[in-house]
Amino acid sequence: MPRLDPLRRRISLTEAQLELLRLCSNREIKPGPGDDPDLDRLAAAGLVDPEGSVHRLVADLAVAMAEPLVELWVETMSQAGPTVSHVVVRGDESLWYTEPWPGAADDEVVFVKDELPQLLWVLARLVGFRRSTPPEVARPVTAPLRTIAALLAAFSAESGGGWDDVRTAAIAGLDGILGEMSAEQREMWIAVLATLEGTWRITCAWGPETRHSRGLAVWDCGSGGFWARTSPAEPLRPEQITPDAEATFAPISGGDLWKAFAELLPSKAELTEAAELIGRPAAGGDAV
Image (cartoon, rainbow, N blue to C red; front, side, top):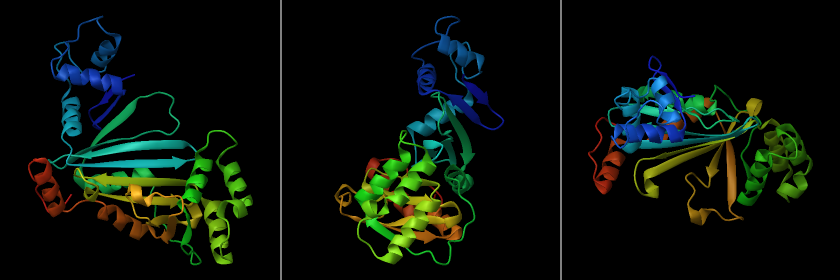
C-alpha cells in the first residue's frame, strides 16, 4: 500500500509504483479514475493528483536518484535476514535513503529524506552502530577468503538450522573450516564466532572509476565488539578476490569506527576531480 508522510518526509512504495510516478512526472502517462489500480492507489495516497502532477517529495526523490552527487550502499546480514539500503546525496546538501526491514515479505521500499549533517547518523542507524570497546584480549584474526566466504555462506543459509545452530556447527567444525593455525588464532576465531551477531558493509562511490570509491566491511560480535576487515581493503578489486588471499579482521572501538564512517566520504578535491571526468558541475563546500 503506497503511503506518504510529508511531516517526516517519507514515502513508501514499490519499485513498480515509483516507475509509474516517474512516467507521470514526465507526462508520459496521465492518471484517470479506474484506468490503473496502481495509479488509483497512488492518487488515494496523495502521491499524484488527478492532473498527473506528482507530490513535491516524489519530484525531489526522482531528481536525487537521477542526479546523485555521492551514493552509498549499506549491506547487512544477521539472524533476521539480509538487507540492502541505498543512500543518495544531492548537490544541495540533502539526501535520500531507503530503510529496509529484514525478512519483509512485500517489495515496498521506504524512502526517507534527510540533510547532509545527518549522514553519519543515518549510516550508524542502518548498521546498528553503538558505543563499543573491544575486549582487552582481542587480537586480529586471519583466514583465506575462501574460508571467510564459507563461514558467511553458512550463516546466511536459509536451510540447515538458524543462526545459533550454524554458529555452533562452525565452532564445532573449526578444524575443518580453518585448517592449521596457531593456538592463539584458533582461540580468537572461537571467540569471534561465538559472539558473531551480524556482518555489514558500506560502499561509498562518487565517480565512474574504482578510485572514486571507498568501503568498510565489519563484523558485529555483540559483546565481543566490532571487527573491521583491514585486508584486503574495501572496495575489493577483481584481482584481490582469489581463494587463497588472506583476509584479516581487527578489533575496532566504536570511536574509531565512527571516524572510519567519516573517512569513507570524498573530499571537495575528490568530488571536483570526478565531476570533471563526467562533465557535471563541481560541488561546493569543503567536503561531503
